[in-house]
Length: 307
Image (cartoon, rainbow, N blue to C red; front, side, top):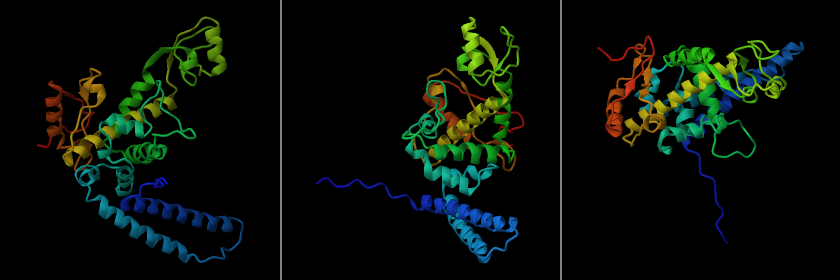
């Protein structure tokens, strides 16, 4: 009889991280129940001291996670100096997608659901394998949006540049492929600035407008800028983590095979917005692999090297 295949046992840091998130969610629900009673003019019959118990448990588990994550070279040597990514978010990323599991950044992007399929970022579908959509929420929402953007991290400078570029860029495509975007010129009865829906796109194609000039809808431009910023951060996470652990590194596919020579270096906020000091050794190693020089692109206001 064939032996039953058992699922892998989660690591202790992963269990602690999951426990912390469960405790925070349970505390939130308990407080919401108390408030729902108060809104109805009733007195909560249960003990309020449970909130203090939750707080003590959360504090204890967070201390355990912080102790572990501070021993990780990628956090202590780089992440801890970036605004918007604390020990909990860092622990989630490291335990859910450790850089040693992926032979190149593209594999990491795909696992996080950020690699385009047929020109589009995949959406969650029942039974879909090979993509961690929960991790996608962590890197895009917790780290990217609530972390880097709301905390004004050095990585926000990338987001601002990308967002401005996407909002002003004009594309030319079949209207049916651009539902939700905005016409950049007048076409037939539809004026510039019209937001395309399925009906309008079908009318344009029916009347011979097989390709039209459009601009991204502002919300689409913001989403695209967010995803691009997060992908660059994940590339940096992969490079820095493997470099500090002594693992082999390679250039991103777009640079190695796509003909691009520009690369954004890892950055930090402390003691001031600047390029991570260890980047220059990584750059030398990548240039030696490629046999050519790389053009390092540094956002405005970011210091290049320590004096």
